[in-house]
Image (cartoon, rainbow, N blue to C red; front, top):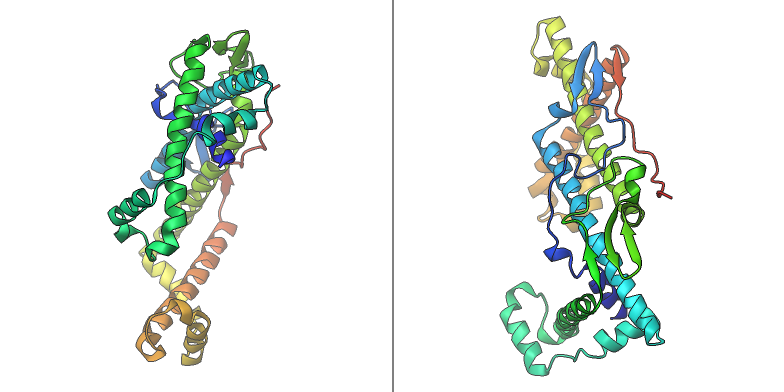
Length: 319
């Protein structure tokens, strides 16, 4: 429960923090940015040519960091206020939160738990007796959220909190790390504080963005090479692919299908005879995928492919 209260204080004002777009609102891209991700036999592939699904996923990840910057400033202000008030009372932060949040929250009554269960019975597997402890925890968590919200607002109201920006933006350069976003008493909260706090998240987002781009780029390189090979042979890409892999496709036997069924029977509905054809088709598609990848690699070895997309460097906190 105590850990939950700490978490609540960290995120309490996140839901109300405004987010405004800037020229580089995320600050998640390595600098200098590379727009050309690869060149395949002289043909460029740029970031803008990646699939819309990938672009949408990247935008979602960047938005996560943009929201997290405002939340991180609130987190650090709340943590400072809690530490300061706890110190004033001669308590640790955990003791203070237990006193002001945990101890002030009551357990739900039997009637409240029963009402909660009846209203959500269809979405809660198991009978009332089995899910009752979980329901009590959920109700307590909701009450702790409200108590932590009130505490955070009270501490902020009593303190001299000066917010100097409407939205926290990433630093444009090294000097920008000294920008002050908020002042509480004599404590200044700078861009450096925010970037240090968000360093693990930003690196994680960079890694996820790299993986998304790398996977989509590999597919686009393979498709481009296949299309170029098809044009050279005056065939369709599908015909080239089938000509390359069909002679190598193995025959999936009943024994192989049965072995797969036995290994996965816990996940398969129906007896073997009923699903045998589906299993054979599944195993065949896996073999086709292996051979397709091998053919794509063969095309790459005979092509001029330069890849400029690089993985992110491990995150180093600004000093």
